[in-house]
Amino acid sequence: KGVSQGMQCIVCIPSGYVTDEALQSKVDDLLRVSCGLSKPSVSDCYRVGEVKEGAERPIKVLLNSSEAAARALRNARVLRGTTRFKKVYVSPDRSREEREQRRALVAQI
Image (cartoon, rainbow, N blue to C red; front, top):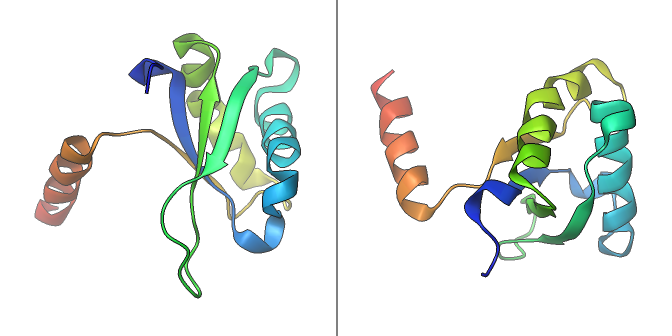
């Protein structure tokens, strides 16, 4: 909770891609592919949400700086062009209120 909002992003890696034990390694690999030599340093990562049959649980990734999070988000589009990470998406971490506002905006479209 002591981490500022700008230092977090959410990554959704389908369960078949990685076990919980190999999470840190897979996130590092993903950032290396998307950011290259300027790969941000990960301070922590863990799955969030409830375990439900057939549902994916996102991974919360805590980076060392807000600049690193911005770089990871900006370079996330590179992952779509790879076969290994084609189904992975990266988005900023949002508060419950921000998620509700975004959901309402998307519903209007």
